[in-house]
Image 1 (spheres, helix red, strand yellow):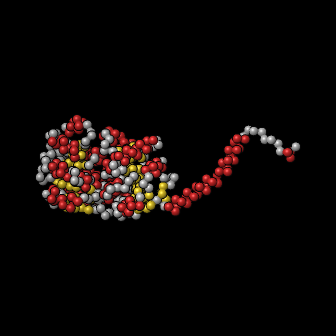
Image 2 (cartoon, rainbow, N blue to C red):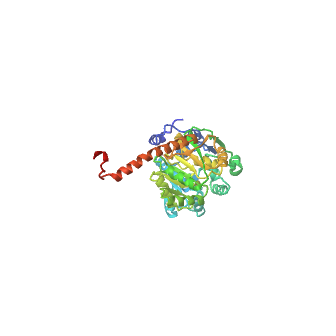
Image 3 (spheres, rainbow, N blue to C red):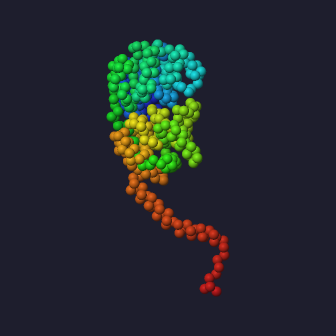
Length: 409
């Protein structure tokens, strides 16, 4: 379909030539008020897929009409930032409501009566219970990263929040991966959902290469991370399965004076914001993080994703890998582990996972190429040693008067 007129300038400014498949597919169902679950690969443009029809349906200055639920502060702010410039074209306002942010400032912004709220579940629930936000006029709900938002710890909270809204609201769910709840959505939400599943479309991930380095030694892992970070073309995110492992490596890299930032859910909101700003502006090229940054984060030109430890399941691997090689660009996913980890890893992706070694320049080689390069370096180094000794001898003798030979007498 053609790009809607009011979005053409935005597409041109961002060098988007056409709508993606998921954007085209959900546009009409969204406009028509249908309830659906939409699944598409990471980097396929899901935020714009729901932002465009939302804005087409919005009525300016008519109160709160749309609630978008996000799993993290960072993602809520990112989605707000994508929608905000477009919302101005339609004469409406969008506000983020997140935990960690200043509550008073958020309440002051609510006085502007935004038509769209992008929120994390906990903070929105608090403000609804405090009667600072009324949901009676809401017409559409978007649950983004739905497999995470409908997990066992959040599902009931989402359902309770929806119970405070009108019965005839439009319910839409967007995700790159599924969970078991998706198989029985009517049971949990009382309506039939159309399922739009485009996860098999690999056109958005063709530029991603998957690598495996056989090591479980933490010291070796830290050295490899530092080596990669010294590559000027490197912009990488290193993922950890838990905060404890993350902070252990932070101490190691601090000791070795490596330049990096860290992002963890236990950090203050301001610290997280500053770390993300330094990384997205390319002032720092290495970010250490837990899965708080694995979902939906759109950071331009991330070249490498590094799994310090093997992800716990296929969905976790898919979301982490989706931070690089977005929209068909090139990117690399590198995972550390042992032979058992490698067997598990192969079940996480249909792509080939190559066992590699890291070269001194930050590139990857197979075992044969790596050994050839190492042998060549050793031979070159060995051949240079006599010359080095000669230069040292010449420097020592420089300026000294040579003793005449006996033949010249």
